[in-house]
Length: 318
Image (cartoon, rainbow, N blue to C red; front, side, top):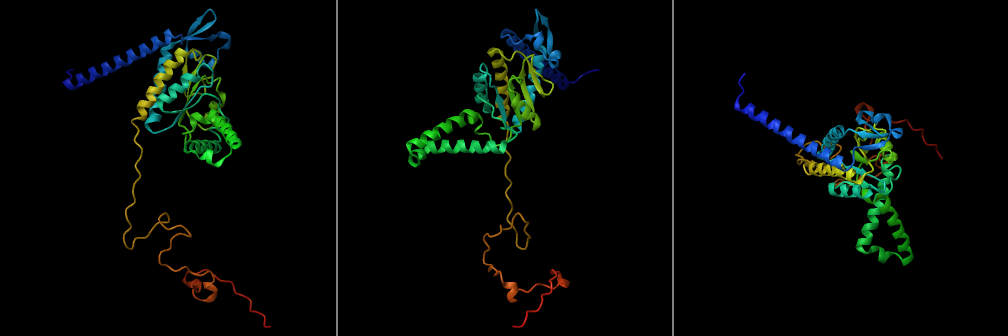
């Protein structure tokens, strides 16, 4: 069988791409190995759902298979890029002390929302009420920037408002630009952040989680099983995810609103194009409310499509 030059070029390019991907995967595995990402917890703390991601056990400590971890990272990056290309929002969640700083830095690099201090219950499942708190925080920030707080309130009132602003910033500062429910959440240690995971499961929001061997990953769509307590390992994976989201988000093209064509003479308008009740009526005179009683606009007979009119009793003679 003789192959043409184009087929040979395609095979070579495909092989070259595979080699590049394998080299990148191997580099990621080496980075995770150097940072200790392959160390799990004690066997007594192991959750049964992570057995398939383990390489073995050494002196009672679980050893994670980093080859499978790298495959999970590639699958998670593909899903995250798909969400970003479609314009979906993502929330990075990491409320553990050792992961707060790196989660915030990764979210800011990606241009995404984040929660690192405290997850307020109902942020997703009761998003309508959370939006009110976000609107309140945005209003206070605007008033503070324009100097309106100093003009409208006394010193004592400003102290109360500043305390409220600090509390709102602590709870909602990372998600204050969130205008709709996210299409995915990225969680560091799903066992520690159980509330956002449960809320996302109720709303069928995909979960991408960096989870240790003590996490239940059976309900997580994109689990990355590795050491979720070492700063270096978590920072390496979050850097990959943040770069992927930022690059894919730059490819998103917002939909363009289609302008309506002008209405031609004699064309009937749909109910969406009609003026709202009580709006501008143009040159048409407003019909008085008592027009029917006065006989100016009598009701059409039923034979002509009008509604039936009940017979009225004659008035009693005085």
